[in-house]
Image 1 (tube, rainbow, N blue to C red):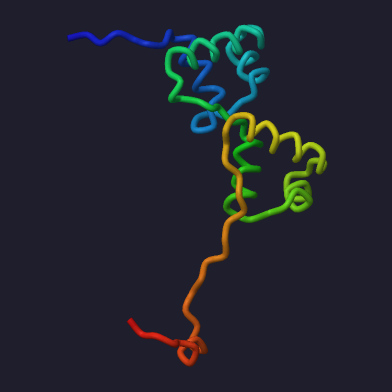
Image 2: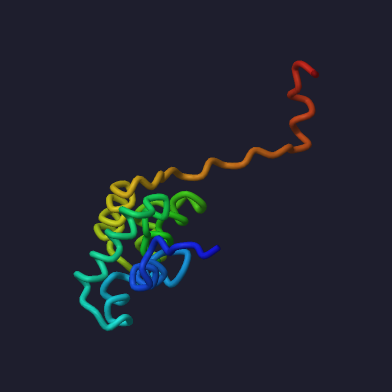
Length: 126
């Protein structure tokens, strides 16, 4: 039994070139690589989103980096700007773009761990 493709080959190529889990290219870079216009890449990605919305959102490499710096490392905008080599304003724009894509951003909470001095602080034992 032969299964039908949901996505066309150009749609799949555009998706793989732009998605953060594959090449993570910008639409301009993907367009250049495929030899088509940036507008056409955007149209292909819109088609993919209509056919397979579960595959989205697509993040750029920079957006993935910023998401990780905030969520995993607990960095603030100034620290992200220094690490990434971009302006604080650019970091703010990236964060707004992430939020617009429905990406949840929250600084990592410190991990609580047992310390020997805590033994004397126990009030009730279970």
